[in-house]
Image (cartoon, rainbow, N blue to C red; front, side, top):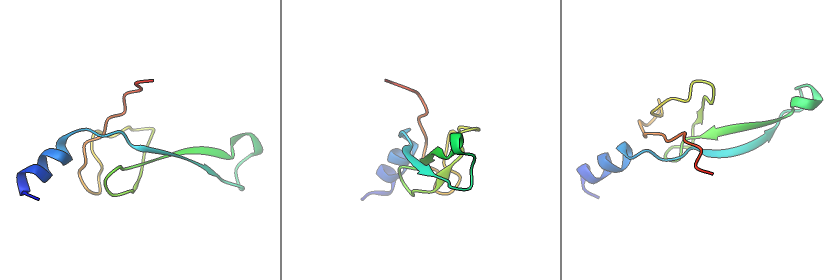
Length: 67
């Protein structure tokens, strides 16, 4: 794949993957937590800050709720 095409794909915002995890050590009503993952490298992202880019791989992120 050409270098510029890779850069263009990384600069095109993609939606983070959403995954639900259960944390047994949390209070019962807060055990199920939504975790967001980078669509390129899979690292966990902060949903509080909602960064524009993944700090690990630089993938642009799209946090819009299009539902």
